Image (cartoon, rainbow, N blue to C red; front, side, top):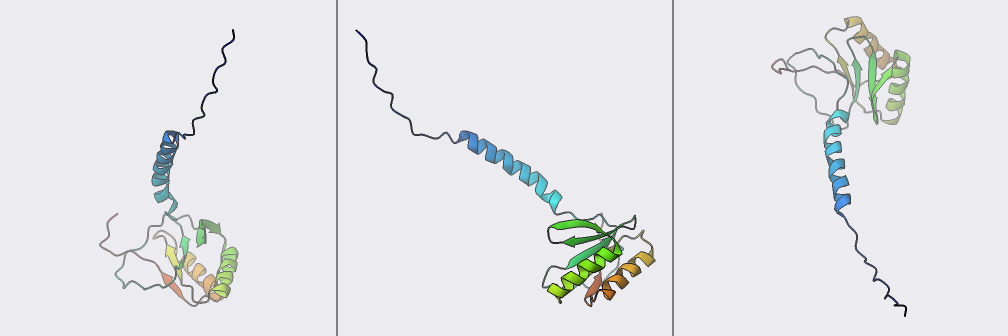
Length: 142
């Protein structure tokens, strides 16, 4: 005689332990990589005592590195390399869309003064009226 087995009852449970493990690994990865994403161009700023400016909107920061390269932060692209002509085009576009945008120039202390002046002249020729320089306080130690 053949015995007939009763069909097994289906188990409707989800094992969430692997999902928790994956989420913890992702959390650690994001905690490690997030500070790296917010860093900008490394520039050794000159030290001087000056009053900080108050900014309503986020300013556009244009940097001149030690090697003489120009960098501009545009939207998600925080480290976009640009020539003076490209930079002037970006500045005109930003000025057209948001006329009250503040442009800040970061210049490394080793960059010749002429490179900073060329950059500022290019921005002014693009119609930028709100233009400032970035410095560090003299008592800040690295």
